[in-house]
Length: 113
Length: 113
Image 1: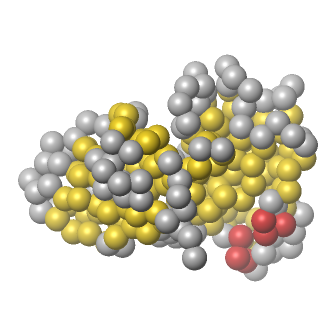
Image 2 (image 1 turned 45 degrees about the horizontal axis):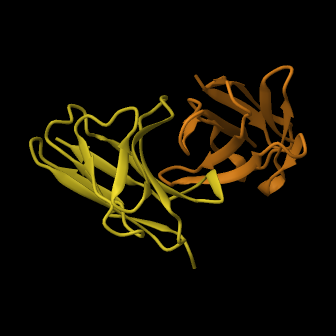
């Protein structure tokens, strides 16, 4: 079955540590996205990538970094510079012929204490 | 700039009653509109989409939405609520530049027996 996988489902880190969230898709989609979800605030775009080896900042990129070395993978690193990293993180992808129709992974809940 | 407003962060309906979730948008370009559903601790699942074809769009799980340009609305309805409809619902519109979406703040639906 085609889809998007995110691992792990739950992640716990100490303040000051960098942490990398995994996102893999086998839908052969060109574009991938990372969102942050906080209660009552909907989804906010962190980074997105439309092709391999290229990515752009979204609305809240500060304190985050990404890479896109393979079409299937778009990992997100939450750095120690992110002031409020505890959140639910969602990865999505879309096909080039339906660029706005995004498919989402199951999410990773990150808790930093 | 594109924006989405979902009226009511929480909606409570009785099982068997009409579900109506309101979404108003603003867009400087022809809009593509989407409704997504999210169950607790899961990713978003596409319910339906408007892409400039028929103004009445039917989606999964018995939901439908009507695009009304004059009212800049894309309200989501279901004639008869089921307990399994309890979830959070997000409306989204395409951004003017790039293959990106702007999401509303979400409406959480509670279904009472």
